Image (cartoon, rainbow, N blue to C red; front, side):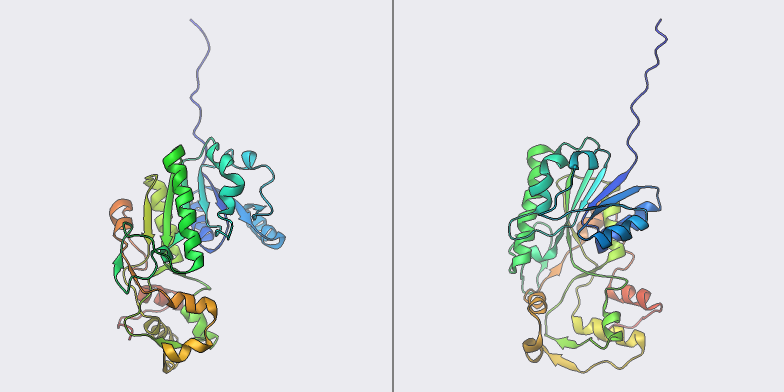
Length: 308
């Protein structure tokens, strides 16, 4: 009888790599680091790289003109990949530079691509789910739709575990209407019948974590809260939470001449987004089901009355 002992190969330790370590990636990182995950990712400046390294996150410089020095080695032990780098006029920089390295990464079990609900375009306020046609109306959303197709092609053609997450308007600490009110920059712009869907950054992290636990490669998920709302309502609630006067209403037509091109583009589409799938398939229970709970938590208080 042989004295040789056979050992099963140990499963790789969970390791999340973020192409584009930004606001949403940082929220997921905070969640997973508490569970013992290794986190690494990319940024665009040496200053950000030094800051991430100081937090214990291995960081690499990356953009279209500066690919990873050794992507094969960098991704060798990565088990989960999150991609939030926006596409540019030439396509998706991550795929253009490192598609082959990603496809050959030996330990990869989950890929999440962060897109936008902007790919649906303008529905005139009608509700859209993940089966709705993509009809983006602004250039950045046209590019996102193209990037979605490219990532999902990796699933269809090579079997990579790709998941697409279409994010609504993101808010959270340091990025919310309360901050605008505190800075004196908030305006209460009214456009009857116009609403936006939103999502708290902590709920984005929760949805991504739920998908990691229940992967379904090839799936597309809308990531938004339960209630699309008019921006004027959100501004009014923020003012009440901070106990400051609510600014007078301004009609959209009167506000339009002073809007930046970016601000105008946000008002171009009017739609409500259905989040049923994240609840049904992933078992998600939103921590902040509407902007009311989200802003109240950010303000450190509570608000029980409806905003109006």
